[in-house]
Amino acid sequence: MKLVGKCPGRAWTTRIPRLEPGNEKTIPRHDPVNAYTMGGIVHDAGLTPEEFKKIGVKNASDWGGTGMKIQKITIDPDPYEPFRLAQGYRAGELLFISGQAAIDENGEIVGVGNFDAQAEQVFTNLERVLRAGGSSLANVIKVTIFLRDMANFSKIVELRGRYFTPPYPADTIVEVTSLYTPEALIEIEAIAVVDEAAERM
Image 1 (tube, rainbow, N blue to C red):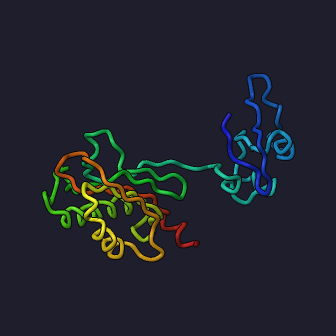
Image 2 (cartoon, helix red, strand yellow):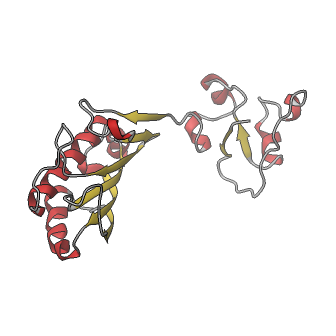
Image 3 (cartoon, rainbow, N blue to C red):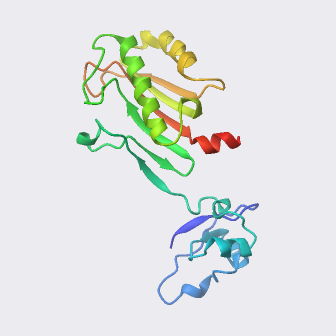
């Protein structure tokens, strides 16, 4: 059984029991009231958008998860492909972006020994993937920044002011002993809201 989400306006601590073969009618698919009494979780029993509207739900997503699509974000060329990594995923209205390093389209490190050059390449790569997923740097809500040397912290503050706009995204900055290669000095992963969702805020 696929769980869809909690019914709006109420809170429950139990969930609908799994429907076993021969027991499919335990929860009538047109009767959300019975779903309430069975734990408040509406199951995906094949309701069409029209059927949702009949029971007073304008959008299936109003149930808290119904219809969420997960899509892989792709770019071409993709320097991550040989490593069996995805650039990121779009899940509903959120983008989850893999850590971006200072590499060019061929996967070669740029700016060896130059933190500023690497940081610029990282943000260029990050923006490219965000745009491929339907977002931008302006819609980033959380980043995790990995540094080889925390002495560059002050430069990160400057970079945030250069590439992000208020309200600035949430941030976690950590120093690590190594990244994917000893020559890499910075890597940034991000979570962002898609453009159309940000426009509604």
